[in-house]
Image (cartoon, rainbow, N blue to C red; front, top):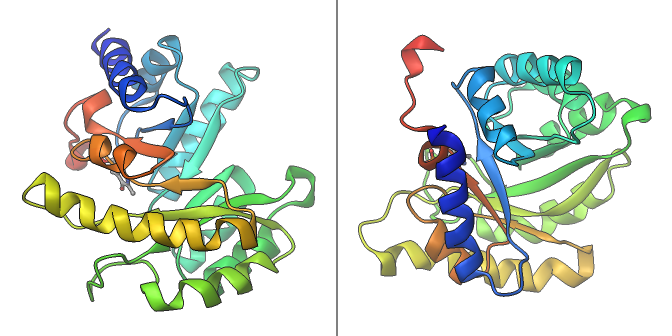
Length: 228
Ligand SMILES: *Cc1c(COP(=O)(O)O)cnc(C)c1O
């Protein structure tokens, strides 16, 4: 039960940094089989993040069938392709990686009414890298304004995936920028979620104000993409 032990250790670390008990732990389970998620569930985990639409939906359906009453919450955190929005809107509870209006529009249109609004985060390209997904910092306000108007989406906050940094001081820089954005837009849009920090940098992220961390390999071990 290494997974449950990893979870316990990470929770203790989070609690030590999080006196107000406001940080949520998203277990990033991409590439891992259902059995790994079952171990995490046995260890008390309920929030899961997936990056690939089909793989995620396969797991959602498995757990809906076998564990219908656990209150599991499924977050889509990977790049959203236009031809996958329907699948994602129908099955996931959250999408953290919204970074284009067209994608937001499709998710809103394709969200089944019966499921209630889809929770979304705006992904911010906080390093200003050309190759990365996410909206540029100067466009954040405009994007939030547009997304907030979409009827079947519930805008919850901001998310980022900073590029790997060499030291703790560099790791903190993008988190500080995100926290400032979050503070600026929190009240106007009723935001409650700042999702940042992964296995390598969740401690700094929490210290800088994250209230959701997305942790994969520190819980489940190294990923092997070939066997996906
Ligand atoms: C894979 C992934 C994570 C988890 O990464 P680890 O380094 O394994 O903790 C978090 N967020 C996103 C968006 C990811 O794609």
